[in-house]
Image (tube, rainbow, N blue to C red; front, side, top):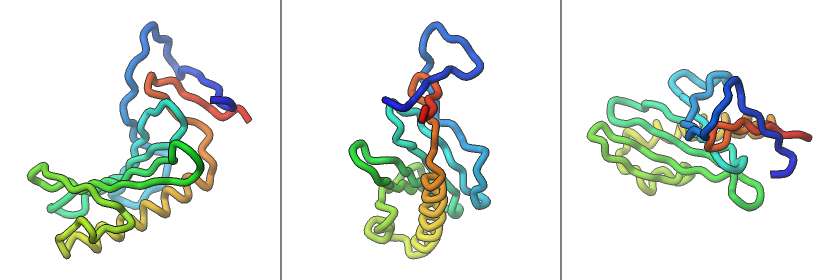
Length: 140
């Protein structure tokens, strides 16, 4: 992890704690969209964007860097009120989502997520939190 310096923020620990997914409060997301960061061992900038689309479903789209090379990958999950879910590709929503009332809602949400994530990556993120809760910051 060359180029990254680590620091434990505001606490001393004797045993590593498993870091939990953390909500992001400092970004300006459209109303109803929440953003969470997932702790990770390498800086993949794994972010989950979620939104309640209607009384029928909650949608989450996850964005992260590829393990090798540059670029972002995405995956989507639609959770229904009965607890069942459908995994889908945010670029091919209608391949898996069959409800014609939900497709346009998910398409609009996916456009918003892609724009938010492009903006996030354009600003060259300089820190991430690993799975033990250690904050890593770019040194150069």
